[in-house]
Length: 311
Image 1 (tube, rainbow, N blue to C red):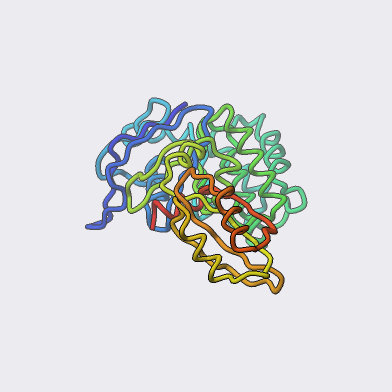
Image 2: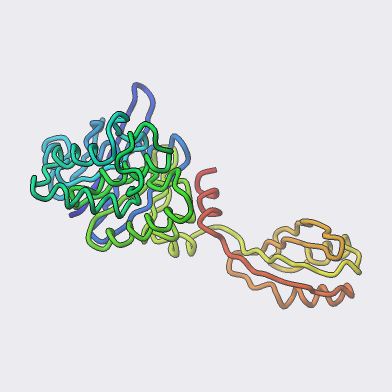
């Protein structure tokens, strides 16, 4: 149960959407697929799920080529696309029964599977309402239920928690993590905290090319980002003199005055990656006869890395 993408390229006319990318996702792996709008994420997912043909390159899902064996690939997949495939004149019960039949769920198991998905996706109170009358969040839950109803080996989820409330987001994240232990899962999202909370591997794509591939921790370690010290001092000093003194510290790249709270001054002090500046900063503050109220250190976050690689 793996997905292998090799030298995948996709043109729309003269526009190059996906540029010769290769990667593999394996069973038991939750792969976060990140990138700015127009980076090629959704196009890649549509090719994997056989909705679009590649211009060149190959995609193989569980041993089946998406072009030569598209029907076999679809049997292996559960797919939640960016635009949810719903019939608004059906109720969730009717729709899930319909999808289960299309997906080949045995007739004797359809009710059981449907009720399981209704419970998992929190649709009990909406089960007999027309889908067209549901909120965006509940429509998203119905879409998730249809993607999972046939217990697929591979799940492709494009923005799976879009429109959900905070409690439901946590529930769906936990569900995805549980499913990811025995399935191959690729999810695309713009919510970077969702990636760190859910995924054990991340691919960042920009302008059709893969610009990073690894665990969140590996990407952090490879980042060109800087360390950051957030310094708050009592406002009984000359802030300009203190700022100048902090700028003279070795390995400090930039000192940024953030705000005057009325009782204190707050600075952001940026240093070389991996440098620990706290002791020398404290000494400089003391030399300026100022008082340290707080000092926090922060390393590059996934959000910082994302901006660094896609700017």
